[in-house]
Length: 237
Image (tube, rainbow, N blue to C red; front, side, top):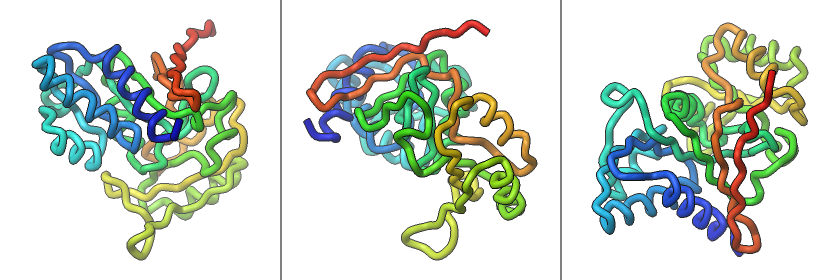
């Protein structure tokens, strides 16, 4: 099975399992979520579902418009029933690295407003420990004024920071929020909770791409055509 077929299978099953009539649904960003939006649009037409979608990025907004999905916002609907999103990497505890597409700040805000965060991905995204499969580092969105001193501070923390540069324009990538993104390679991340906290304590950091203890379930499209369902184990502290 191809990667795209694996993504599609995971997305379809997640939408079928979680989305019900009259729900407010967070619509994540990225290539896998395209299939979720398509499936939701199919169900809206076939089953006459009444749903409202909160997009997590301009790309997500466009996707909802293209599929004819009704849109709303956190201003109108600050509490969501479910948020369906992708991930760059998923560890054994369902902690995530997100932000390869530069949307992690809005994605995290929407996810935090949802009763349930459901992740859809293909088999390449699984890892026992964050940093094993995803080699591009932890995305950190920062205020442009502070990016140079922040890169020095992130390096002092043991990371290898790199300002994300645009491909089709000169200069750095600018997020939907008007900020810069620094990708920081920390190698294998044994304690993602602590790392997330340390980074966010740095003045000028807006948000990290580490999603800790937020995911309820992950649907993983496998190479053999099956979909593996992973549920988060609640750990005692």
